[in-house]
Length: 253
Ligand SMILES: [Mg+2]
Image 1 (cartoon, helix red, strand yellow):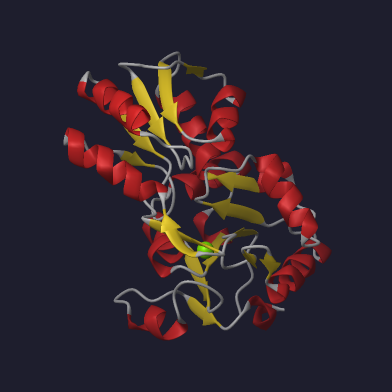
Image 2: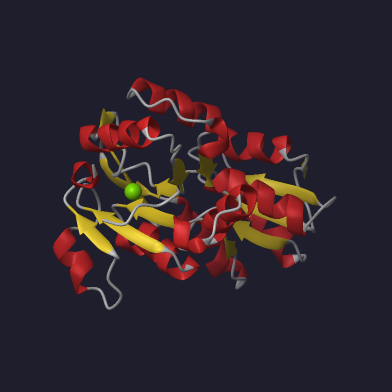
C-alpha cells in the first residue's frame, strides 16, 4: 500500500467509540510514530479544546502533538481570524469553540451584526437561538462548525450541531458557511500550515459522508475503515469509492 507523509485521522468511530479505544488504530498510530510520522487528528466535534482531545488520546495510550489536533472549532476560529479580522463575533457553543476563538484573538460579544458562529451547545435554549436569528437577520455572516445532524454516544444517536444550524437556517432563510468535514477547510489548513503537497496526504475515517467526502472534496487519497458509521459494503456502493477500504488499520502495518 502507498505510504504518505501526512495521515489525517478521524477520531470518533476511527480512534475510539465513546470511551472505548479501537486498539487496531492505536497500534497503527504507534507504528507511524516509530517511523517518525506524527499523524494529525481531525474531528468535527467542536465541544472539546485541543488540550481535552490530547488528554482523551493519552488515556488511550496515544501521545499526540497539540499542533496536530484539528477540531472544527479551532478551524472555525482560524477561518474567522483570517477572513473576518477585527470583527465582533457572537457565538453559540461550548468551551472548545469559545477557547479557540479567544486563542485566535477573536472578540466575542453577546450580539453582533458582523459574524455569528455556531457549534454544538448542550445547554442550547430558545433565547440563544432567537438572538442568533436576530443577528443573522441584521446581516451577521452565518458560520457553523459542522453539518452533522446526529452524533453517536452511549445512549444512541443524539441531535448534532447540524440539526440546530438547520433550525436557524430554516427560520432566517440564510445558508451558513460550514467549516467541518465533508468540506475541505480543515485539511486545507493542515496542508498550508505544514506545507504538504496533496499527493502526500491521506484522510482516514469511518464515515463516508463526512471523512471520505472531505478527502474527495479536497482532492486527496482516502482510506475507509469498517469501525464506525459506514460499513465497507455501503462505502463500496457509493459513486465515488474511497481509495482504499479496510476492516481496520492494522492492515496498514
Ligand atoms: Mg468518525
